Structures are given as structure tokens and as C-alpha cells.
Image (cartoon, rainbow, N blue to C red):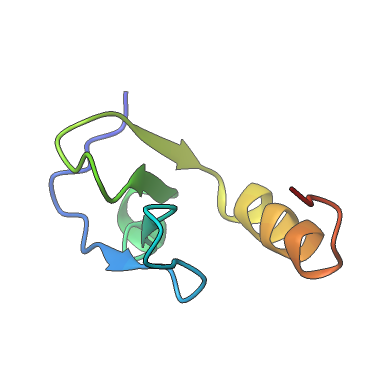
Length: 69
């Protein structure tokens, strides 16, 4: 289990006012080797810890439109 106590959370620039918001903590890459992601509506809830290459691949897939609602 990854310790996320030192995470500095920021709201995604793609979040909107319809409650579809995520927060990202990328300050843990050097210390814990992960990018953390959580639901901004539930900051005390669960968070995902993703490898930096995995996060980059996910963001890249979003940018090219692989995930559409």
C-alpha cells in the first residue's frame, strides 16, 4: 500500500461544474513513484496510485479520444 499522506492534490483542468471532477497528486513521483488520483467529491475516500508511465499512457489515450462518453 502506498502512503499518500504527503500528496498535494490539484483539481484536473478538465474537471467541470457538473460534479465530474478528479484530483491528481503528481508530487509523489520522486518519493513514492506514483501519481495519485481521487474523486474530488470524496477526498477522504479511496485513491488510485498509478505508475508514471501508466498515467502518461492514460492521459495520452484521453487526448486522442480513445475514451468517449
